[in-house]
Length: 355
Image 1 (cartoon, rainbow, N blue to C red):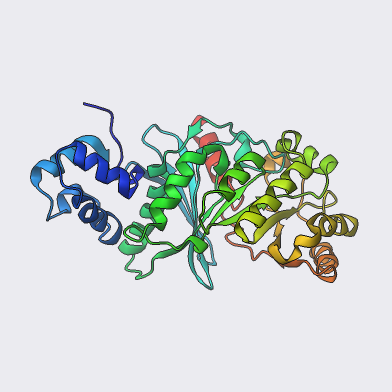
Image 2 (cartoon, one colour):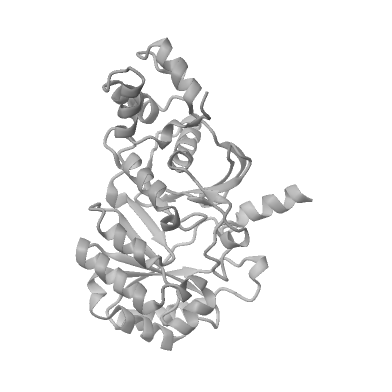
């Protein structure tokens, strides 16, 4: 018998092909997806219009639930952070945030991260492996099941792909994930309600521009020049700012879609008015297609060289960009008191388990 995989790894077309290969009719795919994504069953046996033989085969071939909840934290603002243990024992984080526009979930795409940003908790633990598409989808399903169990008649409506790992370093699985959750017979999460964030893999940004989908793109920029960006983000040595901006411009020209520039405010590092003016110059004539998101830094004990910028400094930076006609917002904070930095809860739990 082959090793089990997640049923959630299969796109609709992949499931149709699998069914035909196993002597079944293609229309069974629609029935199975109805049970998975609309009825949200947690056992194949609950699929009452599926034959017992097919259910037995599904049980032999697939996981319906391969994630185990290890830790759940709830913040005063309702933000929920989940630490899940994968079937191989590795740990990943998922975050649910209540926004004005609905429930947004932040999913993880890799076990660990190799990008090595000097301020980030995710990179404290090197990448062990990529998540498959099903392990990413199941993060949403696990959180949705928790909402169902709590009697909350709400559904996850928005997805941000910016948890642990670099999504474009796991490109194929992330694209399969996006197509599964966006599919009208699946979770039917609108493309414009999905955002993928990259630290700056320029070649993949160009590839993403040619996918023909309306998914939002966010770029973790964090510095307006090569000297500073290379100091805090090693990825800039491979894709310097000018190469990165060429890829971003290509994306905007191909898609006519806006790009969000994520900018973590680090005290005395990248938060001065001169750097704000540099950032405005970098954006240049593409102001109408760029949003700058100024992010308050969540300190990480292992990176004690960085502290969050003072509010007056953030406001001064914001004012420079505003006066330069740049679309800019200061991100609303979520769950600051519950290991808010990405990767922080996972790192803490792994340290605890080693002791």
